Amino acid sequence: MTVPDPTTPRATGTAAVQRGMAEQLKGGVIMDVVTPEQARIAEDAGAVAVMALERVPADIRAEGGISRMSDPDMIDGIIAAVSIPVMAKARIGHFVEAQVLQSLGVDYIDESEVLSPADEAHHIDKHAFTVPFVCGATDLGEALRRIAEGAAMIRSKGEAGTGNVVEAVRHMRAIRAGIRRLSTLDETELFVAAKELRAPHDLVVEVARAGKLPVVLFTAGGIATPADAAMMMQLGAEGVFVGSGIFKSGDPAQRAAAIVQATTFADDPDVIAKVSRGLGEAMVGINVATLPESERFATRGW
Amino acid sequence: MSTPTIGVLALQGDVREHLAALAAEGADAVPVRRPEELAAVDGLVLPGGESTTIAKLAARFGLMEPLRAAVRSGLPVYGSCAGMVLLADRLLDAPADQETVGGLDVTVRRNAFGRQVDSFESTVRLGEATVPAVFIRAPWVEEAGPQVEVLGRVVGGAGDGKIVAVRQGSLLATSFHPELTGDRRVHALFVEIVREARGRRSGAVAGEERSSS
Figure: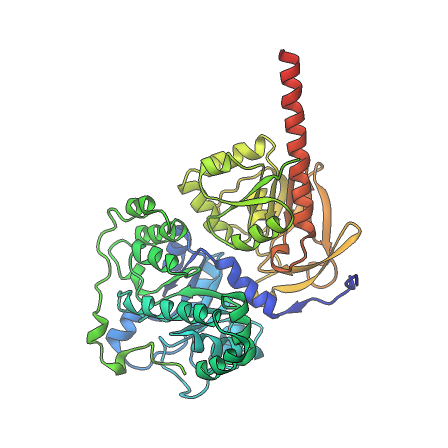
């Protein structure tokens, strides 16, 4: 056996460190916040991390316009307010926003379709960063393309800012079904599968053998209730992003705590029933079927 | 001797990796989320995760006092990263209201090495062995009480010489995540601690039975 050199210099930003960070978030809830006060409410409720952004997706949808990376002062304020990890969003393909977020010391960058895309062909080369990235995906091929670019965590996209879980379900089922299908294919068929998925062959083989993605898989986009969160966990999510669902509801602190508890006890209907009582108004939802194509965030990203 | 049952506190965190490492070292590994599940294990792992989240969930679901009672009664417990924070008697850089299980006579500084961009892979010397170590927003032991045995320290870089692995009786804690590296020597050590504790306990029970007959 070779003994590792005890003077091995430390290495930052490696795959083990980036993907390992997401492993620590599993079973947890990551909450969108727009102020330090909201960040503290999220931490008190038991969030494993907060996502700092300028406007929650429901407001981006309502107000329109171009949405961008948040103001650095706002991100600094949120970092100072809490001891849990702080994530922040960069526009798809906007590598300079990502460079700025890394320099601000955020713990994870979400290259997010919720913001206005900055590049209609290319995503950020995430291998070039020390800070890890999470990216959205609607199916297995999209997830594997993001991982090939260096994403250290995947979330199913759903349709953010709608309070409607139907797209999150669609995307989670598509990703999981894609993984299950790969595990039934032989070596010859995996070459064709890689072509069809438009994903690197080595990653396709890795997923087929392991029966899971090589990175942690969360869910996002439309989760508004404890039962929504628990359903997504039962469908195979390893954790939950909640955007507008908390701070667009009647009692954010209580709803946030309830979603945290329902995520941990996703398989226990007695707990979910208990925490679902007396939560007040859920956010007003949008019927995704009536959304015009141009207003769908999930179709952003390639 | 029969297989020891070792629980992993499964409120949040990298539970699956700990279960796999414990099973590979010959333990019957089970997730623990309820007091009755805690009562059925010979040892417990507090996994990596977010310590504030795990502590809040433990308090809300009535696990905090049973956990404290279990540690007091001598249940072997191993904590990695967030688990080290949860085992510490005293915390630095934590929210003022953060509760811990406690039992380990140490002062632990949360996120001591910095933010995620400062997280790193390196090696740590554990006694005679050198093990690969992944540190993720990791804590370190700022001060250790007289009963605490220092097992490992960081070599080089920021935090050079800081304590990152400790043992106090049946309690074991590391700042790093052996569950992520595939090197199972820390888990093997913990399974051994659990076997010894169980041997002592069954010996004690047998002794009581003899003296009462």
